[in-house]
Length: 115
Length: 110
Image 1 (cartoon, chains in turn blue, yellow):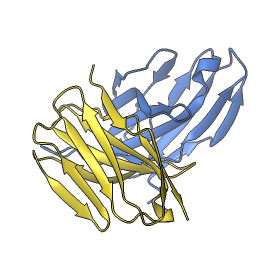
Image 2 (cartoon, chains in turn yellow, cyan; image 1 turned 60 degrees about the vertical axis):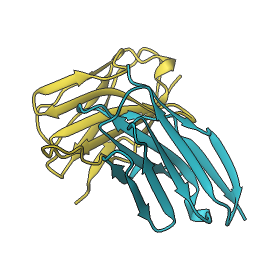
Image 3 (tube, helix red, strand yellow; image 1 turned 90 degrees about the vertical axis):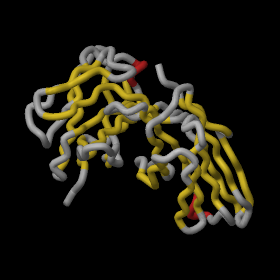
Image 4 (cartoon, helix red, strand yellow; image 1 turned 30 degrees about the vertical axis):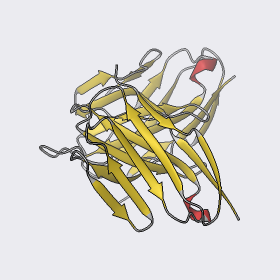
C-alpha cells in the first residue's frame, strides 16, 4: 500500500497562475481532507469530503476549489495564486467507522511558493 | 468556532528530562487525538482518547483526557533525541472534522 500520495512535492508559482495539487489514496477511505500549514503553525482545514461527489468547506476555503469524482482522488485547485497561499499543503484520509473517529493518514505534503 | 490551544509553543530540554504539553479546547470534545510531526515531515497519528478522565500509555509517553473533556496532556518521561518534533492535539465535537491545536515544538539537546 502506498497510502496517501501527493504530487508535486515542490512547486513555485507566479502570482495569478493556477495549478492543481493532486492527492490519491489506495486505502479505500471515504473521508479525505486538505490542510494548509504555514511556517511554525498548526494545520488549518481548507476542504474535506465524506465520499465521492460530496465536498464541504473547512476553515479557510477562499481561493481554493476541490472535486471528488472517485473514492481515490481528491485534487485541490488554486485559481489566481496569491502570495498569501504560500504554504505547505497536506492531504489526509481516514476510513469511516460507526461511533468512532478514525485516525487520519497524511501524505508527504506539497511545498508551494507564490512569487 | 471551535478553538484548540496548546502550551507551551516551544520547549527545549536536555536529553533525559521530562516534557509535558497541554491542550485546551474552547468547547467540549467527543474525543481527542495526538499527532507527531518530525521536522520537514508530515503529521503521524499517535493515539486517541475518548472517555472522560482516560489515561493511556505508550512506552515513555502518557496521554490524559480531562474529566470535562475540554483538555488533554501529553507527558514524555526521560526524553530522547528521537522525541524531537512538533506535537499536535486535535479534537472533534462529534462531526467529520478535526480541529488541530497550535502545536508544541520540542527540541532535545544532548
